[in-house]
Amino acid sequence: MVKFIEIERSQIKEDVNDMFALVIKQIEQASTALLSMDKGIASQVIVFEHKVNSFELKITKEIEDYIALYNPVAIDLRFMLSLLQMTMDLERIGDYARSMARFVKETEMKELNPELVEKTQLKKMIQQVLAMLKTMQVAFTEENAELAHTIFDKDDLIDHIRTLSTDILADYMVNQIPDTSAKICLQLQDVFRKLERTGDHITNMAEEFIFYLDAKVLKHQKKG
Amino acid sequence: MNKIEVKNVDFFYGNFQALKNISLDIEANKVVAFIGPSGCGKSTFIRIFNRMNDLIPETRLKGSVKIDGVDIYQKGIDVDELRKNVGMVFQRPNPFPKSIFDNVAYGLRVNGLKDKHFICQKVEESLKGAALWEEVKDKLKESAFALSGGQQQRLCIARALAISPSILLMDEPASALDPISTAKIEELIWELKKTYTIVIVTHNMQQAARVSDKTAYFYLGEMIEYDDTKIIFTNPKKESTQNYITGRFG
View 1 (cartoon, rainbow over the protein chains, first blue to last red):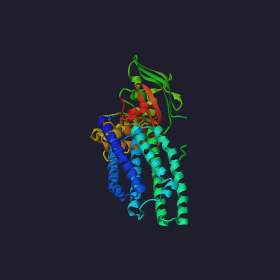
View 2: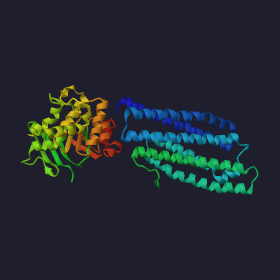
View 3: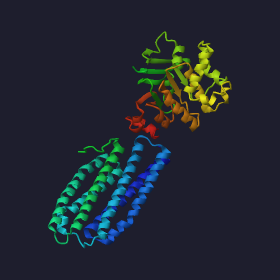
View 4: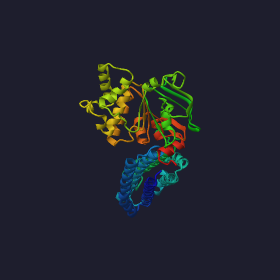
């Protein structure tokens, strides 16, 4: 490949990697804010959201230019298409971090009911989402399809926790446990939904990246 | 039945083996592109289909090349008839120093046709087939050299069509043309494949991707990969093909 095109390609990958790092930090911060009900940290997440959006716009433009100018084919075309999709997934994950932060900032709740956190496995779910995100970043950096494949099983646990959380939160709402109003339960349910969607987007990213590396389309297929 | 069937073809210029054990089939009314770096044998290979290589001294061919089921290298084949059936367009437009009309009529006259009405009809038909009629219908008596490069190339295509071939060979037909003329030639190829089987040699990868149904990649006299163009340009099976089409070659 012509050197300047190779440099351009590496630059775009580097930008996606930087966006990855920022989004991981956003999810980490939003989770910390959520678990400690820290409005200060939540505010920072909201402020940094525009950086995620800027990354998306910048990378999309770079990919558009690359395709228009260099007419990539085969593995190069798949790489650009996968980067485009992954960038959109990262932007959506950034949105979910902001949503979680907004919940923390706007709720009157001083702290999360520890028993509820324990029962719903909220911490475990957050840890799993972060582990998936970090694994995906390593797979991306090292161009490791095998590692990307491990994402799919991890997502099953997230889906499982989310399903259980619905029943637990419904139970809290029905029994009107003190300090846990129906409104808070609904808001928390939304947080679980956002975390689950984050897992879905990380799974999408793994599919996209495997499509780039192995030319295999895994969308809408059983991954097992 | 396939329009063209090539089996185990080796081709030699003296002691130099330019093609090594090539086998491929080409269906009728398809466009097949040959790609590969300079010197890979793609132009030698395309010239096998109308035995143009026979004109070069000390060349020989092993294997079989069949068109419509007939081995074109068997004894007794009328090479002139073969070349009427397999027309060719070259890299640079090469009109004769004659009028536009006479250029197109040339092949018909050389083949002994004298019926003026038939010749006029055939010239018009061929110029229409080459998407040139509207541009030249009022100046058929003018010199072919007065036409632009792109028009001259389409005139050469019309000249090839006039003798009613069923196969058209195109050796880098647009490499000397500007983008607008190139687009016209590519559009023409797309139209012509309804009637003809087309084999095109091109160095322009995007052109191969745009116009062909199948693509064969050649390297050092070997055909490395032959597959649907969509596969070659999205997910080629051989690393060498991928390296070439993505510009990582060499």
